[in-house]
Image (cartoon, rainbow over all chains, first blue to last red; front, side, top):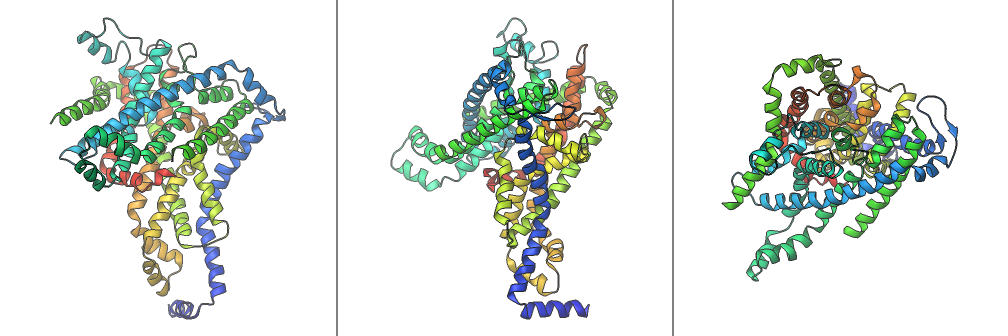
Length: 304
Length: 254
């Protein structure tokens, strides 16, 4: 006991600066070591490995052989991938536009603190707490023609005469999936926009109002421009998320009907685990990775 | 007033699917028993999910709290490189590293393992968690720690005895995000787990719809959805403040 006090007391009074910093350095490293191990082993190593895998014939079982650049040239001959690119882009544009519009509408409706508004914010966000796979299964049941409540309800109010093929045709499958995505993510995006809306000083609104600006003008001239960085963030998240769409299609449509809803990541998955071609899947991963990092960099520069 | 009408109509639209799913799962309560007998049994899948969530939350808390303290209070060579490398996880789409992770975990003897899956979840949570914890430690007054050091504690004792208590709100936020992410994720366990007995709930319930050749039991499916959703809904409602804090702290801006 006396020893520790003595040691600490001495250290506090006359610690030699050089040695003190050296030990601080070592300690800093020790605290950061678990982070370094996780990042090194589970992030940096896989990044290097995915590039190496893409240069090899890499079967699910058995040993790898170098075959560059076959995996890359093969991508061009893969008709499923070409279709998936087109479909994923279409899905991304539609989802991003609709999701942003709904989220912005919700955020504007709940931006002011008034009685009961907390309940509505929670209600809109609540689907976001449910896992995406669970949400997809929920919709899968809800839209089922025999079991789900949607068909009977639509028929009761006279909108449709017979059960709708919710995931039976390519267009309806896309429509149903986007509805699911909006339900699941609108509240999440609303929260992002709320943080942006609340960062706009009220004085700016007051000044505009005293200058005689109407609600429309305030929205287009003040709210939208000042919300730009937040909108950009939401856009980046939505575009990236949509380009990587997997869960919703895997669970909901399983790529069907007739491979009309196969997303790019689904091709990666199928190449790896149905065609047992990990090298081919790695090559597509590398292309996706490069494209997305490039796109993100571009969007960040353009939008901020 | 009309705003409240609009809001109420929208709230009904947003809450209806959840209410319906809960109701549909209760229409025939034997569906839950049916679920309990599906495949390896609901109990096994739920246990797997709980184990993975517990390991992910613990791992994320330990790694990010230690790391956050290190990054906030110490200078060491390679600090900036490591911090940027951690943040780069956000830039790299999740789906593109899962195939190499599958191979890598195989080499580490962690394929088809709940521990391996949890480590992968810790890695995905790390940018957010580390950022959050670093900011929390930076916000603490230095005097708090200096007092402890002068009293003869090493930095580690100061860290565990005093500083950790002071950053509890950040710890709760990090734990909540880690729980929701690991409990709900579908793609990583789908790829990294290949044996039915190690499936987590999302993979097990989805495989229920895709392996049945006869008619799907939709009531049972909604029972599965409820088992997955209720812990998240309850946690979110109880810890909402912490979730929103995670947002507001700008941690999502990466």
